[in-house]
Structures are given as structure tokens and as C-alpha cells.
Length: 277
Image (cartoon, rainbow, N blue to C red; front, side):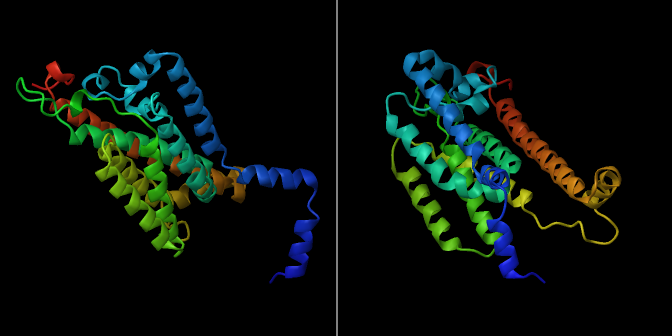
């Protein structure tokens, strides 16, 4: 049992250095880092059109220039400042809630998976033009923006609220409003939003799965934790095991998304940037 007055007194009497360290730990530094990165790149876009041309996703080019599969999330429309402003606001509002709940590493990996998921969504819902009439130009269009990650964060928040039996209705309404906006407003890639949201949802569901470490017989997590705890101690062992499994799941999910990219380009003829027949 704990004495609530004693606990409150202990919190008040923490040394200033400890209080600063705790506050720093709770700050969404990954979110702030993403905002700083896309802001710097946006300045580069304003200075040179080559930045956008090099980093944006163009399905026709992306098999031979694979960095575009991820870097498209870092660039925004240089002729429409509200594009980056809206995405920054979304990151600030939701990222500062999701990042502390997931932890910095898992949050960063979820954002990476969401960005790649958005790319996969675009690739599998667009096709090269058929014949000489370019009625569908999706395959040769340009896709850009970190909104794929924003949708991943929204879906991550939904999973977190479900896990802790919190307020699900509000975030569900927010997602539905954004989906409706994506489907009804022109020049918005609903495909990228769908892919990013689903990837973020899956990643968060995996990262926040209930621990099986207490089950008898020993799961992989238990065995790993038991081995490293002999030399590092229980607390450090638990942290290392979580780190290890976060990286393992990240590699698996990135691998699956990478396989989806390869599979898509295997169905596309070399004329349109693939390697199929």
C-alpha cells in the first residue's frame, strides 16, 4: 500500500534536475523532429524545384529510384502552404498524445511504417495508362505529403483508446471526417491516406499487444528476458526485450510492405517503370 500524502510529498521534493529530466522524457521529441525536418525540406523546395522532383513519389519512377517510396512523406506542395501547415498542426495535436503513450522508438517505427504503407496504398490502387489514351494518369502523377503518417497517428490513437477502454467515439468521428474530406476534395490521395492509416493501425496493434511474459512455459519474450536478465538486471532486461521485439516486428512489417512494392512492380511492364512482362 502507498501513502498518498507521502507520494505527493516525494513528487514535490524531487531535485530540479530530476524534474527537468522527467519533463524532457515526456516531450514528443520525435514529433518535433519530424516537424523540423519537413520544415527544412520545405524551405529547400521553395528554393529549388529539384527537391520536389527528386523526393516525391511518382510510381513510374519509383522502382528505379526507390528512395521516393519513403521520402515522398517529407515533401509538400510548394505552391500551397496550407498543405504543410495543416499537416504540421495534425502532427502537433495528435503526435504529442500518441508519442508518450507508445514510446519514442515504437512511435518512430509506426510513423515509418505508415509512410511506407501510404506508398503501397498508392501503388496498388493506380495503374499504368492503357493504350494511347491517357484516361488514368495516376501512375505518372506526383504524390507527396506527410499526411500518410498523420492518418497512421490517428489510427494509432484509436487503437490506444481501444486498448485502455478510453474515449473511442471522438477519435472515430475525427477519422470519419478526414476520410470524407479525402474522398470528396480533389487533388487529395485517398489511396495514400488509406494505406498510411491501415499500416499505422496494424503497427500500433502489434506494438501494444498484451504482454505474454507471465505465461508459464515461456514465450519468446520470456526466454529472451530471462537470458539477458542474468547479466543486466530485471529493469534493464525488460527494456532490452521491448527494444528487441519492437525492432523485430518493425523489420517484419517493413519486409511485408517491401514485398508488396516488389509484387506490384512485378506486374508492371518495363515501359511503365516495372520489371514484369
